[in-house]
Figure 1 (cartoon, rainbow, N blue to C red):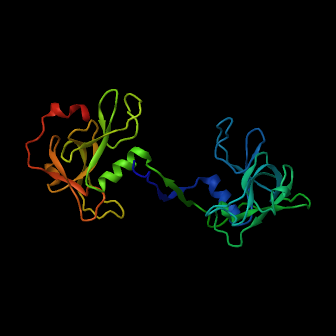
Figure 2: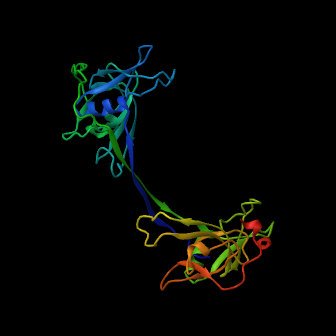
Figure 3: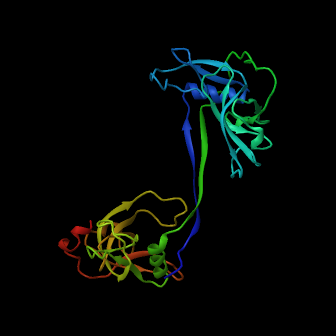
Length: 313
């Protein structure tokens, strides 16, 4: 049995969004060291402010300032901070109900250890030295044993309001394809395509998943398929992908390899994009040192009859 593969993967992208009047005011206020809340029709004060009442769905626009001090309502200790979190050393995640608010704000609490944190403890905002109009303008909360703070009396007449934000989303994780796909990937490095046959329905699935998607039973019998196959369906790609050195337009297709009962994806080359068609017979093209086919090209055989691949579309 081949070694089960694993690899570190990163998914990241910048998420850009515009802000409505309430969120715009809230983030602009943080830049000015002012915490804004929104009043509901029945008198509740919500922090962070929202544009619609979560209970009545009423539109909310009545902004008020609340104090930079508050009370911890619940907490959890973070022993190992991750990249991009508010503090580099261990800290507590806390929900803080600021003085004057009826709801709690989630942020970090800088405390020496979990024994120093408890529900009901008093805290205050520690402002970031450089503020840009983001939630990170609150560097964190810190323990506080003074009197309750008071709003600063802002007139809310901010200049150059924040109108949009860019949030950089990132997910770091280790991916393992499992036993079946590890065998599939290992075979590809030898320029072979291997699927697995279901012991019940006898269908051969490529790439294998370790279980039959139809019968739900485990699969283990390996079956070599292809290398040739048939185009079942396809699309013409007209938008160039970032970091992909392929000129548009090009064709991406479902290809049913000979002997397989499931079509896989592959790029079609060696033929003008407008001549690719259903039933086209193709074969893989490997590049020097490549671990998988670079693309598929026509074999020159007659097109396959529709009846031979209609169940694989």
